[in-house]
Amino acid sequence: MAERGAHITTASPGDDRPSIFEVVAQESLMAAVRPALHHVVKVLAESNPARYGTLWRWFDELYTLLDLLLQQHYLSWARASFSENFYGLKRMTEGSKSGLRPLRRKEYWKSLLLLVLVPYLRMKLEKFVNKLKEEEDYSIHNTTSLRKRWYKAILVTYPFVKFAWEGWFLFYQLRYILWNARHHSPLLKIAGVQLARLTLEDLHAMEKTTANTSSGQANESMGQRMKDTMKKVLGGVALSVSSSLSLGVFFLQFLEWWYSAENQDTLKSLSTLPAPPPPIHFDLETYSPLLPKLKTVCPLCRKIRVNDTALGTSGYVFCYRCAYYYVKTHQRCPVSGYPTELQHLIRLYTPDG
Image (cartoon, rainbow, N blue to C red; front, side, top):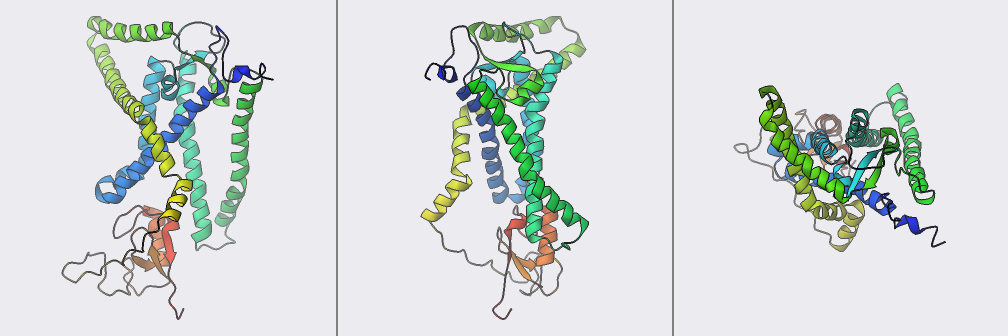
């Protein structure tokens, strides 16, 4: 039994196949970076909505752009993604036996798209499904409408699609562990590459590539120099981002754990803060133009509130219908500008109601 499972953690001499722990660790690295950065941006947006609100609303696209620059730089220079290079791995064409050969054009673009596009689409799909769940809980649309039927069909189908996706990856990992397969992920199989450990020859080849690039710029034309300069600038941006991630990767993983849902439940059980006082109603001379003078008037429709609803992020009270459509459209509080979602709507009930 010990001999049969020895290949899981060790490799025989001459075998450059990484262990399952190495490949799982490099995958979990990028999975931990995004939630940590997401929380940092959220804190900035809550502290200064006017300055960092746009950064919060376009976080997914900006993160994907940075990820694209980062992965493009490492695929061109190290023939690996950032996390793979961080753990001393490289990508090789299937059947290749030697060295740090450049990936073929088809394999390069497949790897880049699968590294950047698949996580982006998956994250967008999860956000879309979560939005449908919120609308299922908070929506005021007719339950027999065609739109609501489509929502329910998607909500019923998504768990099975997610289960099939996760099972697909689990099957490849089991094959990698038990039957010594070359691919631990179906995405590597689609890209036509396999992972291997970096060798000393690979490191020397990477150093020579950097030296040849800098020395060959003297004999190039003006147009080629401009093109190389742009590549160098993009590479510098990617390198600076990767260096920052390399230094802060463990800190980011700590942040991801610290602000996880499980840990937050533990922290709330250990220390419960008293409820903050309600927002102060300003005088006529100093109050915001968004706030009506009468406390019973909705700041959005300027009429007496119907179905009073407070926003959990700011404490301001609106009509339920007004707050629902505004938050659904803008994802922020109409008065304070704090990032807000539909789950932050809190219905208020008077004693006589």
